[in-house]
Structure formats: C-alpha cells, structure tokens
Length: 152
Image 1: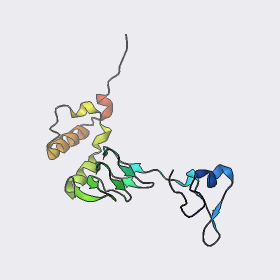
Image 2 (image 1 turned 60 degrees about the vertical axis):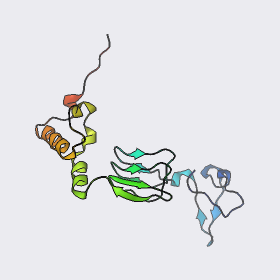
Image 3 (image 1 turned 90 degrees about the vertical axis):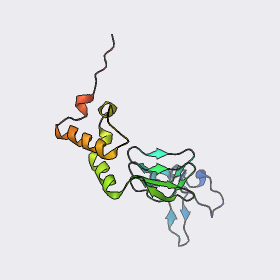
C-alpha cells in the first residue's frame, strides 16, 4: 500500500484513503495525504533481473542491466549493470567496467528483436557490441528483423 501512518489509532487505509475524507494532521497541524495518488511506483530499466521475493520500494530507479538478489529490499536507486543484494540492498559489484557499461547503454541493444542476436557471441561483450554497431551502421534496424505472422 505504500506509505502508511504508524503513529495513529490504526494503520488501515480506511482512515487515510483519499475517498473517505479523513485527513491526518502532522505534528504542526498540516494535513498529511497518504492516498494512493501520492505513491510513485519504482522505475525498472531494460533487462533487469529481479530475484525471488525481492522488494523494490516506491520511487526507486533500477538501471538497465541491473541484478537484484533474491530477498533483497531495495530502498535506493540502483545504477545500470550493478548487482545488489541484502537488507537493505547494497552494491555487491558491477557487472562490467564503466567503459563497457557506457557502450552497452549507448547501443540500446534491447530495442533489437531477438532474431538480431542469433549467431552473435553474447558471451564476448566487445564482439557483440561491434556486431550491433555494424548492424546499426548499415541502417539495419528492428524493422528488418520483424516477421509478419500469417495464419492460413
């Protein structure tokens, strides 16, 4: 449910939902709004692995290529291609060096269809990036690889 008061009679949403008219004043008398409209969902980048039972709190940004360990509680932004884990989640290590991360992000490889990667040596990042850049230099974009499916 996102934020909820813990210093009131009840933490149940009926007492602070936007539709029921309740307002809970803070310590200086200003009404706090705990309605769902204030809750910002997390922003998850491309190709992010989120392990089982991980929790990503509201408003957190998880960068492209990040890995969130199982059971982690992520309360702060996660950089692209970082591996985080624990409670609260902490940076364990980066998947690649800064230069490779910059190249991966610039390649926007996730925009290409899966068929574009057939035969690419995906375990050799530099070679794969070279092939992606060659495809883009030739003007080959995702439309070239899209197949029209027809049914008889």
